[in-house]
Structure formats: C-alpha cells, structure tokens
Image 1 (cartoon, rainbow, N blue to C red):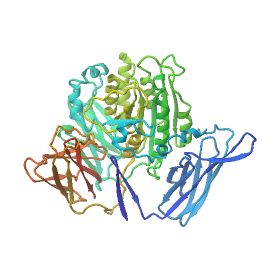
Image 2 (cartoon, rainbow, N blue to C red):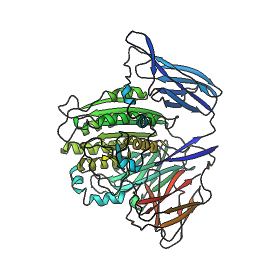
Image 3 (cartoon, rainbow, N blue to C red):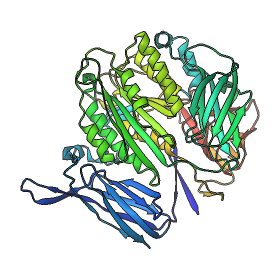
Image 4 (cartoon, rainbow, N blue to C red):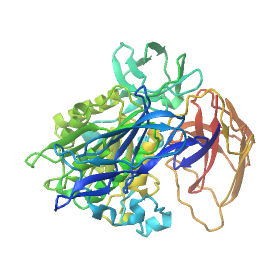
Length: 606
C-alpha cells in the first residue's frame, strides 16, 4: 500500500490510493410547490451513511450544496445506504458493490417534522468562498480581499508557554487577579502502546502528596494529557500520576514538570480508537454580535460540512447553545447532539443577535448548559466546544467560582474549549478565554480587522500571529483533533527524501518575512543563507541533525505546534534527537530565522 502525505497548515491527511470501490450520486428532496405539485430540489448538506451487513458504520459523508456525494469503500460486498435530512423521511437502500456505483436517491417530506429551509441567497454570495475554493494570500488578507469572509488569528499558549508566563507578570496580571484562574504546575503525559500508537480516551489523574486528586482529564487523539497542579495559584506538592486505560492501570511515581520534559508511558494494549467525534458551538446571541453573527453562522455551516467530510469513516455529532443575558427573551437555548447536520443547521439559522446592552453577558450560564446539559458521550475520539463571543462573563464572586468549576469539569470530561472572540472583546475577556482554553487543552482564536467586517478588533497580547479566514482556521483545528495514524503493522512508504533530508533557505536582502508559526523566538538574525539536514527519514528512533554554523538550536514540535524538545548545537555541527518515546506520525523540525521559520518534516514509524 502506498501512502501519500499532505500537510494542511498543521495537519497530515493519509489516504489509500488503491481503493477502487466508490459510491457516488446526487440526492434530492421531493417537496410541494404552491400548486401542491411535487417538485424536486437539491439536498444541501444531507447525511449519507453506509453500513455493512453486521450494522457497522463503514462510511459517513455530507452532500455538498448541490446534493452531490462521493465516498470510498475498502472492500466489495453488500452494504446498506442510509440517507437523512431534517423534515424528510429517512431512505434506506441495499447496494451490492462490485465496482464503482452511482446511486441517486430522493427523500419525501415527513409532514410530522419541520422541513430544513434552504435559503438560496446563502449560496449566491461569494460562490468561490462558499465552495471553499478561495485561497487567500497574506497580501490579499492585509488588503481586505477576503471574499466577505471573517478573518482570524490564533494563539496556542501551550506553544508559547514561557511567553504566556512572562505576560502574567506584567501585561495580564490585573486580569489574572480579577478572574483568579491561572493554570500552573503544568504536567504533560504522553501515552502510547508498544507499537507506538497514541492511546486515546485514557483517564489521567494528577495526585498531591496527600493523595488528593488535583486534576483529571482524558488523553486526546495524540495520546497526550495536559494536567495542572493548580488553576488558582494555590501551589501544591505533587505526588503521582495515575493512568487508567480500559482495564489497565499504571502509575508515574515521580512525574516531571513540563519544564523538565514530557512523561511518557507505554502500555501493553492494542490499537483502538473511537470513530465518534462531538462538536458543539456555544454562541453569544446578544445585539453586539449583530455585525458578525450572520457571517459566523455562514462559516459554521461550512465548517460543519467540511468537518464531516474530512474522514468518511468518522461519525460526527453536532450541538449548539446560544446565550444572551438576564432580562432578555431567553438566557440560554440549545439543540442537543444530532448526527443529522441539516437538523443542526435549522437551529443555527433560526438564531439572531438582539438584546444585550451592558458588556458582560451570560457566558457562565451558557458554559454550564454546554458542559453539563449536552449529552457528551463517554467514548469519543474528540470533544470540541467552540465558544464564540464578543464580551466577557459577569465577574461576581460566585460567577468566578462557577467558571473555575466549569473549567475543571470540561477537563474531566475531555472537552476542549476553543475560544473565538469578536469585535467587542476586551483584554479582560481575552485573558479569561485564553485561561479556559489552557485549562481544557484548547486554543484561542480571535477575529481581526483584515476582513473589514464588524467593529474594531483589539490586538491580542502576543508577539506575532498569522491571519487566515475563520472557516479555514476552524476546519484546521478540527482536522488536528480528528487525525489518527492507521493501526497497521507494516511500515508505510512515504513520498519524501530518503534517507536524508536537506533544508536550505535564503533570506533575500531587504526582504521581510512575517512568522507563519506560533512558536516563540527572540532570535533576530540578519538576512543570510542557512542549511541543515537530518537523517534517517523516516526513522524509528533517532534523528541526526547536521547544520551550518549559523544555526544555534532547532525545535521539535508536533503538528499542532506544541514544542516537544529543543536541541542546541553549542558550537557542534551535528547533534542527535531521540523520538522513540513519541507516537508514530509526522513531526516538525523548526528553526527561527529572522521573522520567519525554516521547517523540516520528519516521519516517525514503527
């Protein structure tokens, strides 16, 4: 089997080119016009699922805005095709697959259910953008040429951990004192099996010396767990870390802090990962969001469509929570998890931004519903909660305490909070959302002025960031949380330089580069040429790096940008780096040069 590797910002897609069996078609909806005559219309964002004869889900995709779908099957055989759409009767069809199959299916109205109303004008504006074909360069973004799409930046404070703590001493100190949420005493656990597959869904607990549970979380799709000794500045002496994976229980007796490295634990278990992913959206629906909420709703529709079609063997459920404030039409309103995308879109499309007036909104109540009332599953590959807002929470003492409790609960359930802040956010709200993202192993996203949409957006407290369309960034975050290397015994062949890899880069005189990465650097080199190489590639354990005299150090990161190691040359021309304790997959070797990053890609195999 031949495997090709593609990197989309920070994510690897692996797919099998040898698969010949495909099921494709164009699905439609039978409805009635004003004369009560049956007419057919396109099935925009309808669910198509394929089951084998043992009722196992083998593929799941979403039709595009024209009703088209295309999915791949690994084997020939007999399958059951299931098509679902809000307001219409589910249609099931048995198909014998010997070669490629074309199956066009229509659904009839279910008079007992509400029909999904497709607003044609949603798909008429900026067709290239809506089709996901618009590629925006940095220069176009700066000029505001983004196809009426919201633009965004991202700060992953796990990747800028030292910088984040520097800001806490000065720029962000007043906000830390207000919210009293400050995750510290950081411990990172990496779980793998003997075949170096990441172990997903393990319960990981950090204990004090007095045997009290200080933090509890679930390992994510990379097999990592982020643990905190404190989130309210009460420093505690650490005892041990307990790991429970299925029936296997292990302990790390003397865990090391993140500053000293990552705690790697190997378990003698098989390779197994859930194909269920749950994505929830918590959205501020007060009047101040009115300038951006329609664009956000359009982006959410596209993001959810793209998310389902990332991997056709993954089943995604969607939920939405909208909140306003006390005295409004409602404080919270939600739609629980459903695997039928069109049902989720009905709820999203019905919401509008009204009310509000004062700056703080009912974020605490919204988070409470999203974390405690939505029916999150026990076993998933990922649980993602996108919190989209433009104002902080109420800051009364009881609300702050409730926020701390909710952050602890989110981590315990394995729910990652991904903040997306709009034009009304202030520094206080920025600090709160970045802290909640850290507590839950999430990330912080913020809208920027480059799109020209909405009010003025504040600059975040950071060094550098890149600008991308919001829907592209959210899709990339989802990709990073869905990816999992295949559980295969053979070592795949990779299309890259083998066994050596050479990285060569030249900064032209007078040319200025801006960082395309979130890693921190204090290096300010003059324009010059550098080169370095690393080998063997792919590798099973060690990588040797040879560099020109201009290079001082190289970072090893995972695909999300989290720093795993820093190797210094100290005047040497060659150093070694051990990867044997990490899961199989793709890693990045990165060197800061001026205001840009020189990047090499290394593959770790079994």
